[in-house]
Image 1: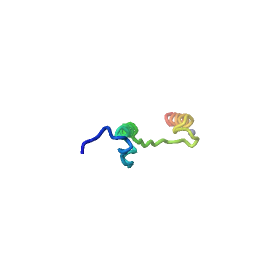
Image 2: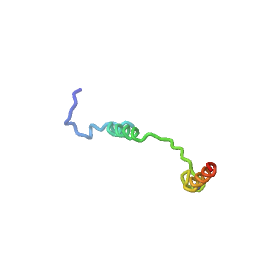
Image 3: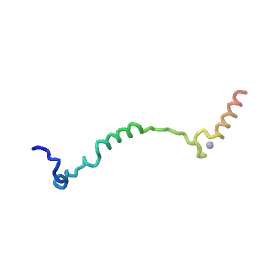
Image 4: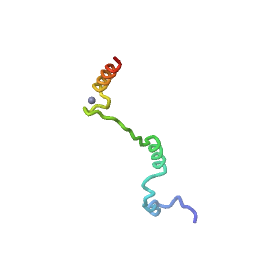
Length: 71
Ligand SMILES: [Zn+2]
């Protein structure tokens, strides 16, 4: 059956299905996004005072202790 470009659009509506939700371009973009945003598990030590560990106070305390050991 030959394709008829002059057919009125109303006669020609494609069935709405799940595949219509995302165009090929959308899928390509999604691939790019997923590639650029890989999940990265980050383990971060948090100090009891709420700062990232070691906080300045902890660093100073370590300094003091190491200094005492060194003496
Ligand atoms: Zn702290």
